[in-house]
Image (cartoon, rainbow, N blue to C red):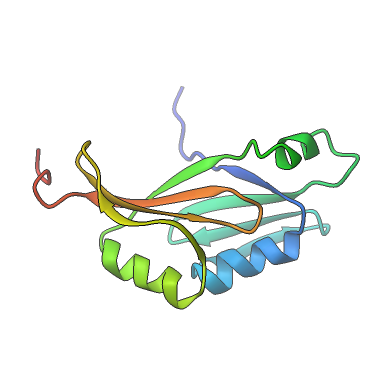
Length: 128
């Protein structure tokens, strides 16, 4: 088996709000929209799908119970990425910090409670 791309699907209770967050706050581009309940946003060649869940959707319990997906974005310039989310007034869960596992990361939350990690290899671990 050869997997060409892995695309996470995030559940949302408000598709338009989710699209605005990823496009306006994080700089993604809207790639497609399907029948008012599904959309894809893209940053470079990386895609995230957004799916509207309503009360009748089996996935609504995951959203209501806070069982969200966590996504890690590898970035080249962690400080520039952090400035971008601060300037966009995104909810920061944890500021930039060096991790013992060799990463420099920060954590934000999207409007549906999905935790988004942004990170880069710490300067002292690059090339190892």
